[in-house]
Length: 173
Image (cartoon, rainbow, N blue to C red; front, top):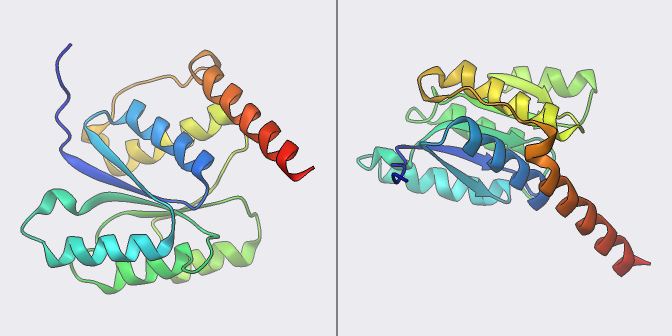
């Protein structure tokens, strides 16, 4: 099989390894030429963006899409978004806030900080995969490909997550 050339970065900022893994899976399925780069905190995202801005001549490091978890310790997704919008070199990068909350005030804050979208994460893995595919279709239409995130394709991931939750519960009990 031919080696895929990675040509651009989709930045995934999420402090949950399991959710980041599912997001990475969805990105790789929908945009195989993308480098799905996971950073597990807002502080790491700010460091990465600072480095990308300082090395602007290496444009391959600048993300083409940023997927931000809303609720993270230390530096929140909204804080990262504020910095993205404040820097001229990142201001036009599409940034989407992902969260579990339906709180209308959260939506308002997302708009105030100029998010391109606020997506309430589906707890259903297949639906979540389709949400991510929809975001790529919207902001990177030339880079996406038609896929189906069927339950069959996600069955191993769901089994892994179920095992992880069981192990975690056993450790705590």
